[in-house]
Length: 163
Image 1 (cartoon, rainbow, N blue to C red):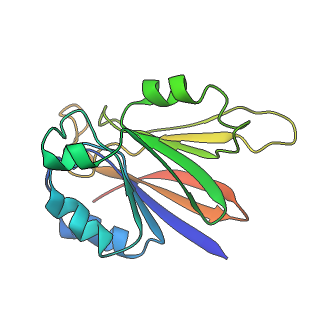
Image 2 (cartoon, one colour; image 1 turned 30 degrees about the horizontal axis):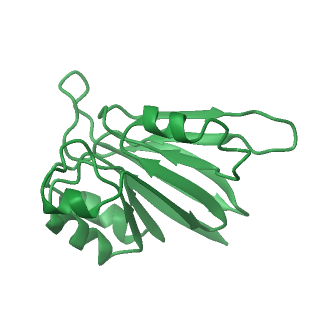
């Protein structure tokens, strides 16, 4: 059995049909901050279970509701999400030892996928920044999201660029 996790970040109050269509096929959605408004979370929560955190621009009432860090599990894979990578690194210096297989962050609007912690007998930990599905940077205007397919508790992670 496979579990599909869609990971987005930095929507800044906007979400379009293409992103919603991708999320509609998910078993779980993770939003790594800079949500930008309650309407975005409401749309996502109607599609699949949702884990979301506060970003540096979420300063309104919604930001007060969202945590700086959240943890969860999907398909046997434990994950942790925060808006900034440095916060995850400080809080989880050895995520593999904690049983965490996926660390998710946003903030930079630049997609990134790295595997860390290659220890014999242990699956490496995936560190994933999905980029931004709604507000990409000028030097790389491609919108992106992360997709993690979990099989037997192990992540098959990739960055996907929207057309």
